[in-house]
Image 1 (spheres, rainbow, N blue to C red):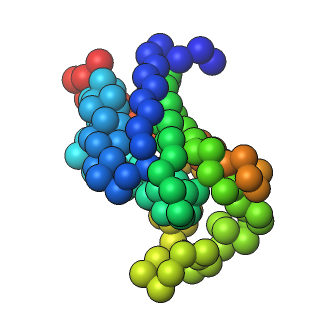
Image 2 (cartoon, helix red, strand yellow; image 1 turned 180 degrees about the horizontal axis):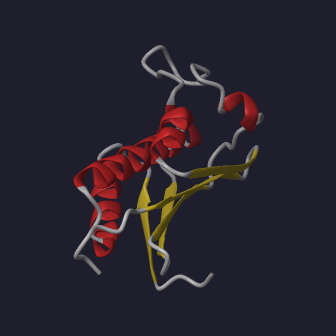
Length: 146
């Protein structure tokens, strides 16, 4: 299915850009007239995906993060967060709750949180070539809207 609207944003892997990405995704999703709960879920999932890219993909340097947003006629929002960092050696292990390659401040719940707030989550990664996380969620149609 072809999207009815798209946007692409690129930013440096600075922690200050996590809030920017959350807000940009929420503003883009607003076209579908989501509920506040849906917006908060989207912001949380984006926050986790972008934070993973910032913290894990580029542990020793700044890098580039790209967020692609797509809206579909059926009310589905798709968000892809891509980096060109160190990559993930074992995606299945990384998706295991409480597993982290970060320090003791990291909870290891990022992928689990993304899965719980979105309908689908796909993770593609190659060591040394980066990671792409693609999440989607169908937003409810509210009575009287659209």
